[in-house]
Length: 298
Image 1 (cartoon, helix red, strand yellow):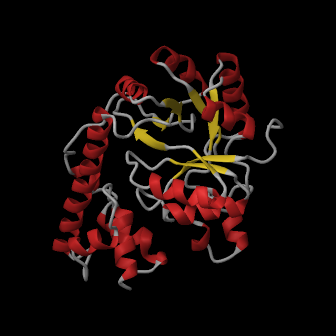
Image 2 (image 1 turned 180 degrees about the vertical axis):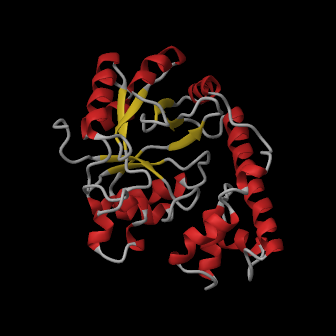
């Protein structure tokens, strides 16, 4: 795509408040050092890291956009990014609290199963909570981070830890609260005053064809420059989005420098051969498209 050479804003990022590697403040500094001048923290079904991220951005002279990434109930398979919504709007606040309870309950239950069968040792659930203070949406990453802080594991142990203790077990735990449907998520974000963005529209998360399908529900925008969307598909998504007058978003998600996994590769060659590597600054949006979102001018 020739429209954007280097992105101004990275609008899809995860922190230690969901399944990211960096704290919100660390994430802002890394994004700034990579050349971004605006960002949005879009943690999964939680907003507890936004205040820290925004404060760090302000200190760096970066622009900030409030956000979160919502998971849609099956059979739909979308991820929906919400921007600039009021997290204190009572129905939204209640739903976010439920999502934190849902994830944390599943994680604690699986954790206790793993302790009982010897898959996890040397740490208690209270220690996991203490290490992840301020986080309400706890997944296996938070357990592993607490174990790493105690010297029980290293980064090289993560995949074995995950496969033994969490990969199959999480699906065995009935959720405390259901995810909302696509329409319900759209309606909730809009009622809270926010914008609805279709995240990484590529299988299994949707496609350019789904944009038309979601327009009647009130779709406001779509991610284009995202590492999971191949260049050829980005062109198709962008064309449809421009035709329909939608906002253009994008970001690095779990790939790229801000994805947090670069440090786990032993050398540059293996990093660049991995699916996590992307050209610096390529994911995200232009200043013009960011301003359209920020100012709500399509």
